[in-house]
Length: 157
Image (cartoon, rainbow, N blue to C red; front, side, top):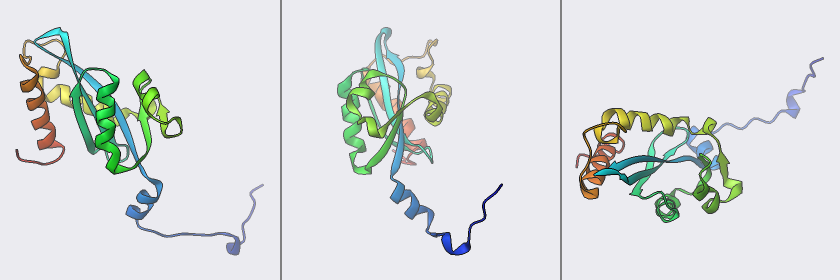
């Protein structure tokens, strides 16, 4: 039933977790989160990427839900040499991420979706039905950017 292996036929490699992660390559979850400035007819999107394993925010960009904004985010992610991207099925990801590096589906984007819930809970202007909203894109981006810099990167700005 079970085959027995001779110990001479088993190869074991021991290495540090950091070395293993470096060999495997960094994996990232990408997603965008909707909010608005002034009125709902003026949407503003927070695009961000997190490390798939640790949940650490790698980069973020504000803008419309357009391909150009995704390309800006990809530029910020270039130094990380990411080997696999996990996203939802939105078309911009399919157009601008190599299919061999791209996995589509909600099964692998749970951490970033959880970050969305936390952001919406902590920052009132991200709640969809609220009377607290930004009147200018500058204030919108500053408030959310300061929050991310403080709580994700530990920067006291």
